[in-house]
Image (cartoon, rainbow, N blue to C red; front, top):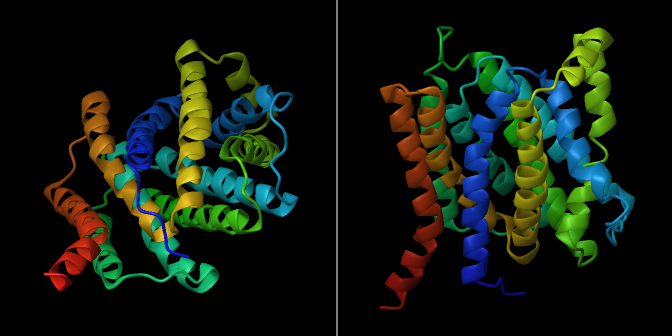
Length: 303
């Protein structure tokens, strides 16, 4: 079946997700100042799921897809990401490194989903990969620097994001489901694992102290992460993945660093090293090649 082109509405949805997710890294960094990584995950998905279970019906899908997406996107992606941000990953560079999910998605979509990748997609992702490798070499242990541990954890989070992309595409082959119920119900399954990890890592006493002493800014962080970054953004993202091949949708996330780097500079005064700026430029160049390379080749052949 011929893939539909991106409509104006789909483009606006993709750009809306870019803005929310770009701001998301600064919001998470703020939240982690007062709340542990695993507890922040438990609170995020509790607010994303529990208030809506009585009003939102379970999606018309087998349980395994809902559970699989919840564990991959919730526990996997954000467990690694929150821990990475806590252990030295800067907000701005996190917004860049997370975009390796586009490589992982494309690499997994070919054998798992049977999707075909254009030469321009491989070239674009190769250019962006060079940029990410350049960023990875610019780590350190000083104040405000990206640590190697934080980089590896964030890379692991990106891989789990790619896995969740594939689960969403596989689920779409089974049934035409509504993204919002899918996100609400899949958010149920990370809650208990996150809570158990929090109790194991921090201990019951510290967990209770953090919950009882939750400040208004921390509560606003949780609500932003739950309702905007999870329910709204992932519903829009999943809708795009239902309508279009994963290799066409996921490269849009490479625009997230534009917002993420700006937000990190405004709120935290983060200024990437020259090596990191160069790497970021290559990542964005890779997006341009990925998105426009195929169109240019088609136009050139029809001249």
